[in-house]
Each structure stands twice: as structure tokens, then as C-alpha cells.
Image (cartoon, rainbow, N blue to C red; front, side):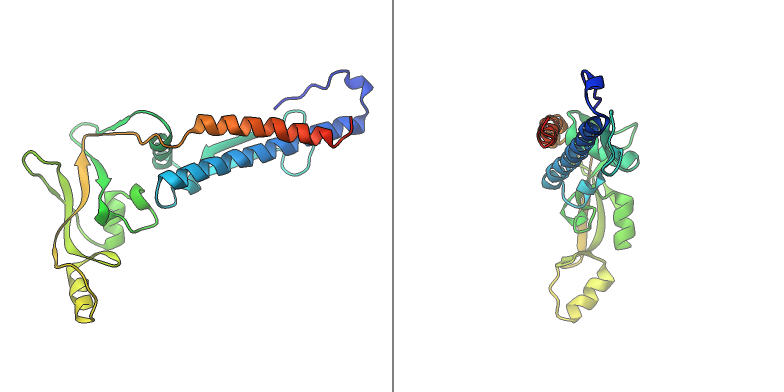
Length: 217
């Protein structure tokens, strides 16, 4: 946001400062509103803590007047976070490269704070289990592991046996499908950044107008 006060020489230094301060507050509130909007949308669309990826920065901070206050909302993280944001907010298709596959979490892969954003390597680290590929003619390939399912999700065979002896109910030990292996996956595209920006833009205008009205200009 950049301001040019018309006939600035006719406006006192103090009044100009208050106008610029009102602009700073408007940008700060609109930026935070945009961040919260995207967080709410992402939380509704994706399980786990994916919504926490959204962060914001404003300049200047605090109640400081500025002719050109700025605000930015962005995905905080590396390539995985950027890919996550693109998957949920942009039209398109994820495609496997070369002879590789995309690993899509199935029910047995869920149950951690990562939700559907967990990778096979992360799953193996979390459950201390080894995944292996299972190819079936005419059907979707899988990554599977031997174990049982109970209230806490996937359980290794040895621990499952001990839990059964303790009276807990689990499925029998079996080969469990954890990830589906696919060659491409359409983006979910359920988070509308454009509409969120439109709402934040209207809030910016409203906040600035409210700030000016309090100055009795």
C-alpha cells in the first residue's frame, strides 16, 4: 500500500503522521486476516497441521506511520511445503518422474500429526516398520507392511501380540496396505487463494476508511 496525500503542504505534519499510521494498522490487520483465512481453508481441506504452514510478515511493525506499509502471506517451509500448498490451492496434476510412483497414504498411514502429508520414509520412521512394494496384475500397486490394526493404528506384530495378551483388541497380524502407488494425481484445489486475497483487499479498504474516520478530517 502506497499513499500520496493530496495537497500535503496544507496538512499538518501530525495529521499526515496519523494518516500514515492508519495505513499501517490497516495493512497489518488485512495481512493477518488473509493469513487466518488461508489457515481456516487449509484446516478444513487437509488433516494434520498443514494449516500451520501459512505465515505472514508486515512492515513496519507496531504503531509506526509509513507511506508504503506492506504485508506478505507465504508458505513457510521447503519444497515439500510449497508442493503441499500448490496441491491444495492450484489446479494441476502431480506426476511421477521416470519409473517412480507417487505414494498416496491409505487408512493405515494416517494417525500422526502429519495426516495425509506423511511420506513413506516418515511412516517407516514413525512406526519402525519396513514397507515393501506389492504389484498386482491389473490393480494399483501398493506399499505394504506386516502388522495389525488397533485403536492406535498400525502396530508391529511383536507389540500386537503383547497387547492382545494384555486384553487389548487388535486385528490379526496380516499384510496391510499402507500407501497406494500411482503415476499421477489431480490437485485437490480446495483452498482458494484468489478469493481470500479479494476478501483481504476489501478488509484493507474498510480498515483504512475506519481509521481515517476517527481522525475527523
